[in-house]
Length: 321
Image (cartoon, rainbow, N blue to C red):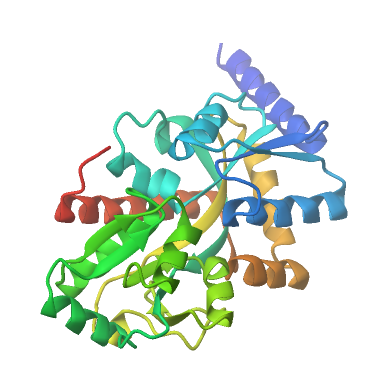
């Protein structure tokens, strides 16, 4: 019996190895929860285009928007675990949404296997160009003069930008007024129009307003300065300790996808991220740094971020929607 079992396990191992060696034999579908042109979409296309260019693999990037990202993530969770259905997602889907929305139809541990963190980027803290606020210290001082009245815009209630701003406020010991908008671009435009005092957003959405001198940057949201925007200070430098909020983008596969295929996807993707032109494009398009974090480490990072955001949601009393 032992000999039969050993032979069976060996056969399975050899079959998995053969499957990985042949993979892929058809186009790989990559689900994206956001519209074309956004940071998740462009990050995905930079990678898949490079793999196609270098190795000839075929990809279909499938943008399924709506439902707070739930539509795309749910489709990916139900996909066959054969390596031909992948999900490209960011911090919001797995580290924030489970705590700000009711009846989230997916779970990281139950439904997915982390493949690779592609990139990581700070969010940018901006105010109107004519605002007297020029630093984190100015922001805190202004908020303390009128508790709960200093307004900030976000891409919507429960967005990672919203919760990250609440994290900043909690760490600074201040209260601010949340004003949700329908997307990051409208939130930055609201700052430019002086409708709200501040917002935090990805660098690409900020650049046009910076160039037009409608907004100015007072800092970033990560614990360390970013190589993409090295002149922008961190909250810690501004007297606000403990804040480390970023937007990462990564690939996930349905739970049960063979480890050999996951490892192949990881190694190929990590190799592509080393090319100078790929690094440059991530920096230009998303203000992001390429990472190439392996599966186990990436999974642990997602869980760590989730614990952080869970505490913030609880601390500020954000009710699940």
